[in-house]
Image 1 (cartoon, rainbow, N blue to C red):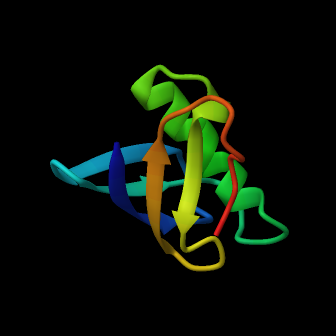
Image 2 (spheres, rainbow, N blue to C red):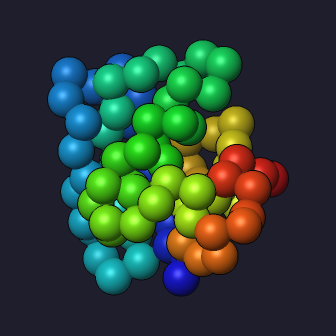
Image 3 (spheres, rainbow, N blue to C red):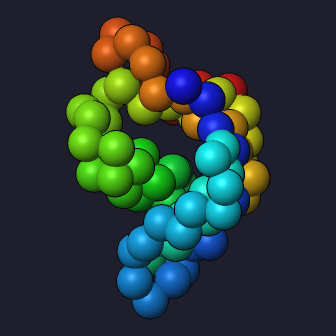
Length: 81
């Protein structure tokens, strides 16, 4: 499953806002420094979809706020561009 996310780093609380079937806005507390926000996005998505974090990966947008995320095979590299 692939979907689009817009990340809002530095938020006061972590939450996911569903825009439509394939789009989400994700608020994370971590700043966009040294991959901290990306790790938080993966963690929040794993909790939301109730899947292990290693089944979620960033396939586009590792260095930007807009990303394409894929949930799939547990053997995938979780952060990839």
